[in-house]
Image (cartoon, rainbow, N blue to C red; front, side):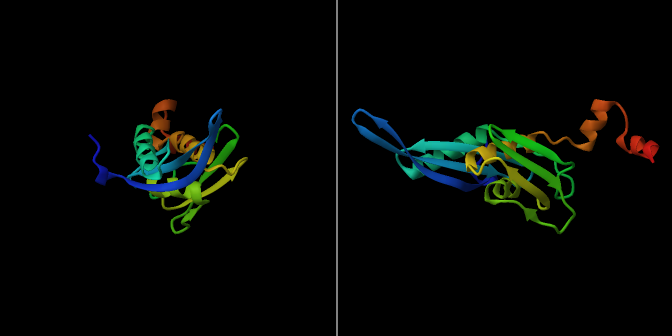
Length: 165
């Protein structure tokens, strides 16, 4: 079982949402949270209840279910990638050591809790934190390590680069 000390969490967004019924409006709070261990595992979750503390607990539980493992190389990502979710697009680019996290609030929180120290990001299409966080997770899940690429292609990537020169 996963211990609570293993993961850090950060609130990305809290919204008051309402459903209009015959008897009036039902108010609830929707909390979007990111949970990560700063060692390559990160997840995003959503909780919605009438009280914020319960919604936070729900969001943490949901985030732990949607964890993805991020391939990192030396504090950054191995290659450029794009993440997409509905109308949200997120570009993730590797950066040189010392660059830092060049990202907005939502994507920056996800990268920070995934353990990425140097990255360039750009979000396109939407500013909704929930959509952006799902797009960022999609992009991070698409990352492949050098070893995985070599296995897929059946050739050493270093040798292939040597022939192109």
